[in-house]
Image 1 (cartoon, rainbow, N blue to C red):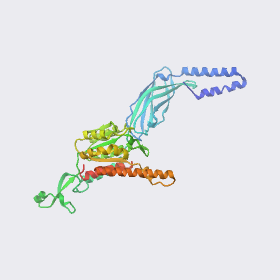
Image 2: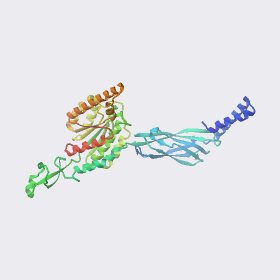
Image 3: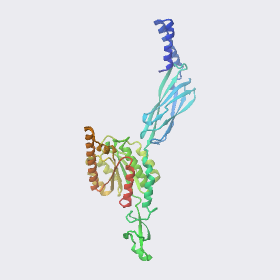
Image 4: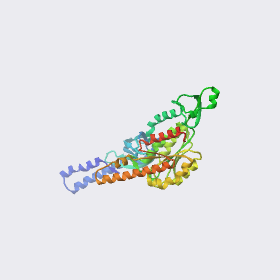
Length: 430
């Protein structure tokens, strides 16, 4: 039951008879009138429990985009239901205008639409619809929460998509569509052409030169049909926030750009998300189906507050990738975690695969290292400087193991990782 403002006004109206006939009898008599009026109003109000709720399916949406979520209310009772209905989405669903006025005659239905603009990735849920049925006098209302479970899957935003055209243009140059092939850009033979000044003499095909009577060189193109395995670290170090989002989200953005680029280059892309156990896996996706499957698998991922089991991760990678592959480990370069977990298993991975470690750097740490002022700021700068030195030491150690490292802030990591992939492809190192 809920009391409306009219009931409060009706109680205050009792001041008028009290002014003419003050005393407890007048007060109690007026209070009795109010109670009876409220009881009658509640009795005549339609029952919210007799309202049926049907929730329409909601499609998935990218983070930051809008969509409509609809429910249909049907009055199965014998009295009119007038009042309000509220679709109770969780706050991170970004529901706007959740309160709807309703006026349902017996047997009638109404469709209520709530606009959502999610502010967090993952499954945003709702469990019920609250219906408040106000009596004909407007003094009181009957209220009930009606079960109406629903959810919407919020996919990663993929902000780095804007870099894809420029990276594809560079890929076309590597493949010789907008530039001449140069020896060293890949190891797959493409065609023969006449020698021009500047060509690498090592590309001369002497047999073809003898047959044609003129100097002929071989052209090369980057390897195709290679395998790229993206490994997302979902352990506690990925839960740390850089700016307004966790490191895991920034790593996902970099993985999506690299996957889109590699699939256009003719390579096969797989995904493994893991900490101590496998959280998500995408394998064998076609070029057209790759990105939808990746964003669907990434959407519900959340960083777990456990240490990554790099021995298990390396074992899974070695079991799933039998042929030589490009293995991209998207994990933070936290010195302690890398030295204790990742470094011991990297030699096994680097022996069979080309390994790249991509890490999300926090620009605020660099800004803190430059801080000067009172003792608090100076101590913070010293801590930030030490963190930077430890990060540089870890990077150097990874380099000695033959591992490429891409360490950049969230907005720069996707294009730099894509550039590293293109450089490896141009050098024929995949």
